[in-house]
Image (cartoon, rainbow, N blue to C red; front, side):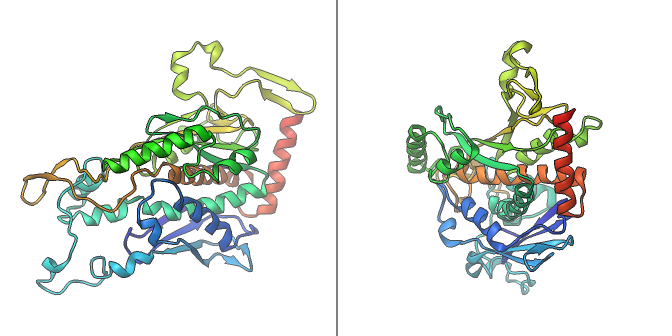
Length: 390
């Protein structure tokens, strides 16, 4: 499975085309719209989310509520487009009209793609860069992830994400008994945090950043339960599933780091406190006594829950801009201000769920059948039974 996305932040729409989704998967717009709505929520979000109400249109690849096996086209319209038709229009400008186009960007923001992208593609108006490099693009990545979640749900695989840290405030009470409990609590939290005491402090940190014209980042965690043993491979670097997930996490806008299980803490511990002891029972077969590895060994799943965390830096668009240099005059200026969030970590946890779900679903589809959901489900169950009896 693979997908491509297209569209600009203030263009008419965002589009994704999904290839390789198996036939026979139940899929309706509401499966996707639920995830799009989750992405739009979150304390610290800017005014753009008050303008947009993201809803998907399924334009191909689905008939009567089930996938056909052919490419699926998903479209999300930008409601704000009506205010940007002159600025972002597709038709060529009349001679001499270039100066009439408003909101030209010549002052790159530190921490954004503006300057690098302008140099790479030769753009003198950096709006050509920021429109595509905007995190608005993650809207259709969440749509793609919603389809992946449908695949996983058919196989009894559960996915949940939550926020562990915002602006240095860390969640400490994480004693949830199930992913259902985690989801039930975090879906009601403005910052998607299970720890209610930390939730309040996180919101205060966001308020403080907003008051100061600043932004703050944080850490999100995604947990996946029910993935059978041996998904992925050790035989080539580019077939290791944890490597694919790591790449997907870091591909999310503003994400700068990723870890599995105890992650970077493993560098500070002896091996006896890092590796997971293997146990066996007649009922369940082989298991790990702990899950410090986060569900992976040798690029393959162990059958334990997959636990992956991502680090999101503060958004680079600030209302108290850092110094930059105008690319036309070469004079120092405060960087350009675009409408933005003071904190998008809660929304980013939903995006992280989506990209992790996609990579796991793609690996399972490749390994267990590819074309038909019923065949994939049968083969996954065979693998689970084989692993129990091994």
